[in-house]
View (cartoon, rainbow, N blue to C red):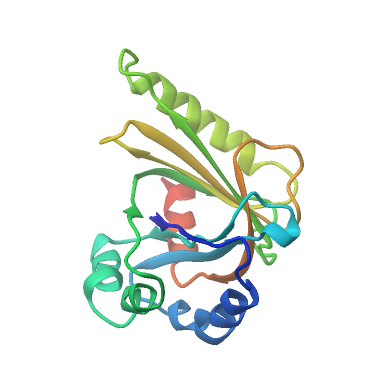
Length: 192
């Protein structure tokens, strides 16, 4: 799941950094959550836009529902910035990388749209194989792939312990990483 709050070019991104510093730990023990990466793009650091764009992996949809409309969590985003659209995908697979025990400082999200004439089985199988290759790269904390079948969009999300090299996709800075159910999610994938 991800929502993006795009902010004006002259927005003080320090406001977002302080918000995450003050509130980020609130999801460190959130039931049903595998991980939440508090992400930003900052024009002062060379990004095309100023944006707050947290990304979530859920172990259970009940946790996602509780977060979105159970009050107290997503409510804060709505009150501060208005209600953004929330994109969500069906998880396909996730794997730990060699740096899974290191702090994540960067993230990438690469999106591939599947043409209407293409059977999704092939591209999704290729993405699973690509995920295995990505998860072996130096500096990878963890990586996941998911599909939105309403848009036939395949997304690969990767957390990095340092700045990624030349990799496709949107780049983010990680301000905080909540990982209450990451070991459960990744252990389940590795064992399965």
